[in-house]
Image (cartoon, rainbow, N blue to C red):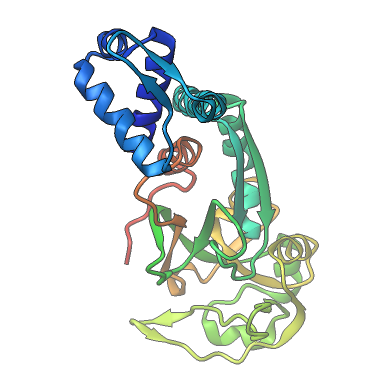
Length: 300
């Protein structure tokens, strides 16, 4: 900033025809303008002005340097104007990674887009673990506890898992009354892409985890097929309750063994740590945190 001040003092001295009028324009003394120009000349190792008791005139080097200075100061002013405009109306591309259950947030994302039409949303839906910084995301929405000192986070809510099947399936296979009854049911199981492990259904009794061996009927690595196949009557799926609330309300799916699925999971938005949060990211984080994406549940 000291260098920009010296460049400005130089340009003002040229435009004003001397240090006295330049000082008046800048609100500083003529000697302060003269000293700023002198320091600039010393740094550049060349004389910019021919000085006399009555006037100052540019040297040949000063004339060459003047055009560069005008360009630099013009670019700086344009950058200030652009930043001020962004502060007033957040804009630009916002690259967000969401889990597959994030499809349930589309109405809220549409509302966000209507509120901020100058922000271009690029949405990446994936259940794979992503590196926010290395993969170039502005923010990610993820479930569970995340430990990364490079990231900031805000909690969006909590959800439980629901064990669901279709009414037709239960008419044929019967309703399980206890977790052990699952050994007689077809299970639609999720496989984690990163580890390759099958999802373990979080069943508990009296605070103790239950190790139930599930008869796996089908395996998949995304959420939507689990829900669709469960609706089609092909078995039971253990999925986030927020992903099947419409189906439960409509009666196309029925929830069972809810007393054994009391564990809640956090869902949060995370972004790279930064002292200065960009306006577009700030409004996104604030909007998502206030949007009530998930009806509130008490954390465990």
